[in-house]
Image (cartoon, rainbow, N blue to C red; front, side, top):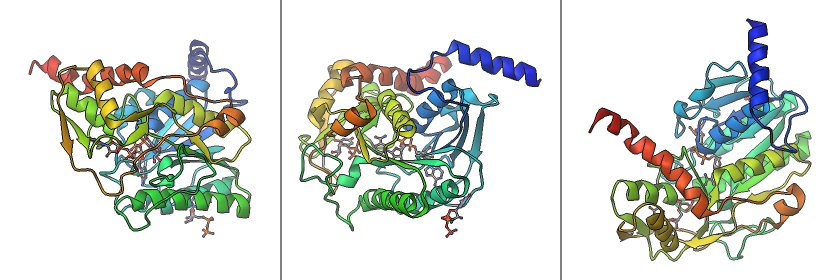
Length: 338
Ligand code: NAD
Ligand code: UDP
Ligand code: UDP
């Protein structure tokens, strides 16, 4: 059996072209927390392609087993249902720490960012693993500097409705840096800007998934506020490339990982109309409290030190997400004939 498995593994490796510069020196043991989520599952695909041994920890809070189901049965892949708020003992070389209740609907009252990050740093310390934190552009709050560079300290309301997420990630960054300085852990910090793509949660309240699902269901696109607030949207494969370069590179960060293309929410609604349904209606709704007015990454640092920049534009990436959403929304119902 062992020989058959080895042959299968070898064959798999030969089939899949590896991205230049990101080959593993040896097969690493890599832990991905939150690996059954949107970004995590795309990262797992790349790590498995590269020949790494991947362990996913996920409590399926917002993630889904379906996102990684294609790896089940692969001896290089292991899926553990576990909440990172509880300690865990594992032996790994690298930890990509993504576990987080990531959408506005889910992130209130949750200790994952603080306690979960502490546990994963404790694990990294015990086994000497390199630790990558997926932080967020939200650490800049409602920014007074535009575009945001990593040197900007942010403008966050510590007691607002969003602060559990913003401040949770700020604490996570602090903990990572303390373990780096105090315990000599090799850490990497990514500040991720709005990212979209296939496997995004259908109803998690984020703007791209909302608009796409609404247009496909023939519901009006819900624009919050006046729709003039801006965001920059990054396609998920660009982000995964950036995360892997950061992990394999020599720089701690923080690094902004995002697409500098900036759109107002009304412009985004227009692109969704062009891509899915030109007749889709727009409906204005009151905005949430403390909503940042504009956001756009300055990615000079990642360009220079990681040799990274996004390559997929919104108009190229959106159709790829739309196909996935169409399948998930209507694929089964078509088969069932309703
Ligand atoms: P996601 O919700 O799809 O993934 C998060 C995963 O973590 C889910 O699978 C969820 O079940 C899991 N999880 C949550 N709490 C957990 C816990 N206590 N224990 C174990 N697993 C837990 O979201 P995503 O978009 O893939 O985000 C991944 C990471 O990237 C998050 O840390 C998020 O903060 C960060 N990020 C994402 C974006 C974005 O636009 N997608 C932007 C900035 C930062
Ligand atoms: N931890 C863990 N797995 C490990 C090592 C530690 O989950 O393999 C947890 C541990 O339970 C603790 C946290 O990580 O709650 C921080 O660990 P550390 O050793 O840094 O702190 P200490 O236990 O000394 O307070
Ligand atoms: N938004 C919107 N309609 C929606 C969902 C969100 O207009 O159906 C707006 C929201 O007010 C914010 C922007 O889109 O200004 C981005 O929201 P999202 O929750 O996707 O990301 P974040 O606020 O974390 O950047």
